[in-house]
Amino acid sequence: MSIYHHITIDDREIVWEVDRAACAAAAPWAVRSPETLEADVGGMAAYFPHWLLAGALDSKPARCPRCAALLVPRAGALRCVVCGEAGRADGLLWAGHLPALARPEPPFVPCRTALRAAGFAEVEAGGAVYLLVPLTVACPSEWPSVEPVVRYAGRWLDALGLPRAGAAHHLLGGGQACLYAYGQWWAQPIHAVLQQRVVNHLASLLKVAAGQRPEQAFIGRIHHEAWRPD
Image 1: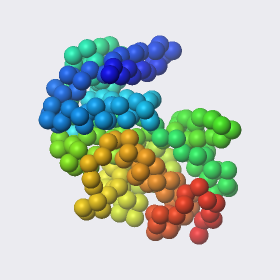
Image 2: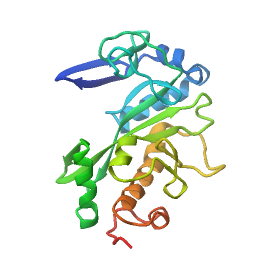
Image 3: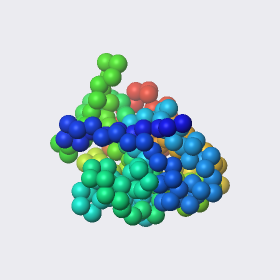
């Protein structure tokens, strides 16, 4: 099944078909396990249709040296999404935003103010306002036998006064989330990782940013219930 991705840059919509052959050239696991690639591409199209599949270098976004735009699998290679020039990548990652409810309680107001001041967007849906949290999810060379590398944008963490690394915040370094304890990982598609682990980790980080102690924010409380900072 053909899957198309799109992005709008300077009011110009750019659309391309995800090229499986280009994916396989960048990530040997896609040759070894094509069904895994299909599960990821199909699952993300169904549950997170605005996320983009892109090239990775050292588990970070591979970018065009000329345009600084993402390299995406299109037309037989990893190509700049803007100029179409082919570039180098040593893996694949997904890039996008997760929506997080902009809570109306007073402790969350400074969080929204800080994120707005730093230039991060919000969106309204169903009468509620959501923060748009930038993330990347990189597939390691052993994917799916090894868990993915999930990273928050460093500037997003900085805007909220959160560290880019720290055991108390379940962050391994460079904004990478620690989502699984030793032996917990089992092979599952990218969309399931986002749904089952990242959403809860993100909710806990926002609680910390709003004043709750990390040891309380990360104990598995129900995140939609009201709470007070300690």
